[in-house]
Length: 557
Image (cartoon, rainbow, N blue to C red):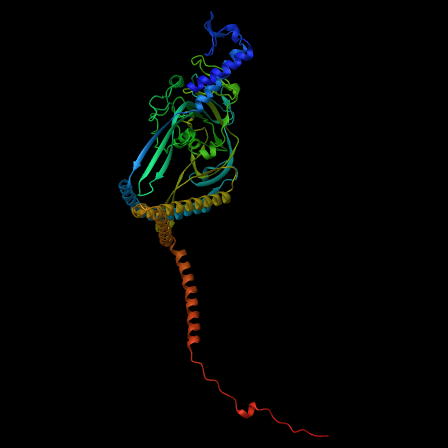
């Protein structure tokens, strides 16, 4: 702060010298003068009047602004140092060895389950391909398809229904037409702890020194006011007008807030809120879904729209600014910014701790969607979010028959919804491609877990070798290569056995073909070997008279 005061004083002296008023006043004003008088009129509204700004006042305001920015950049930090000697590292390596054994035992089981899951998913997709009834015109579904698995394509529409939020001071000024979903998200500017670690290994021995540097970062978060900062007891988070927002928004629709997850540190607040799935039914947030949503003659319930985020909630747009109130009498601190948000941050100012911002967003109807679902009859209940249509969609539990109907296999639930217009063939192809990608990703994850398990199993040896500077690095690299080879071999072996278990016919054909090729190769190699060891006959010389040239008599003329 002394640095800030000196910079401020230097700039202020320069401004006074330029203005030429330092000698006239006889004193230097180091504190910024913001003398605004609150005048209460007869109606009860408050107005602000201030004296005209001089060059010195403008300079002071600019200096305060720059000093505030500099103060934000000079965030204080706290360092903590942890020392772990060789004995401590050996104890840690023993724990890693136990974890490695668990990973080596669990990873093959996960591989086995993944292969079984993959086969089951492919059977489910094939069932959709063979059993789904294609409805060419979704506007006119028929009774005969009720209870069947159907495929249809159409445009999501709410007709002329207008949608707004729950009544209260934080609602939009008038209902919004052509809106499928409208939501209000409230964020507060809070302080968060960030950490960065630096590790230094001992030159001799396996000891290690870890220095963790904690700093403060301020950002917007929709998760509400945060608690005290563990490493900065003198810094606290302000709640601002958050409690007033909760009061004005009214009671929450949900009974209780979801339990917070233990997320990794240093995550951005917006990503942490996304991973924790902020409950928009908790005050002061709010969400409203149209009760008239439908695709052709099929009604869409609120649960379907809220659960299929990738289809129905992928294109959020800002609510038009004219529908956002300019001010709220019960919350005079709020104002509407140029983006159509309600905020406590003044125009041109930086947000400070405790400031709030309210965003209003909506999803417009008129986009296409494709379905492979079960056609069901709807019990119209507009109050519960079920539109007044005869037919709706639901998940279908599939039972596949094997061995001429003697064995029934439960394939689970079929429910395919995608954005855009896709025929049955395209949806089946996309579903198979997605399933292949998921299976590959899970295989790679299981392989990584298996290799990591073998590496952890050898951690006690790498710790012992790390007591020597050169052997530690070489030993770690050698054990990593061994773990990579052993883990890869185990992964391939388990995958092959699981493939044979869940695809016996295909595996038998492959093995038969491979066995036939191997038999032919071995047979040909044996023939070549037998031919190479047969005795060679001694050469037979031709009679000598046959080899001697015949002497012809010469005739003289």
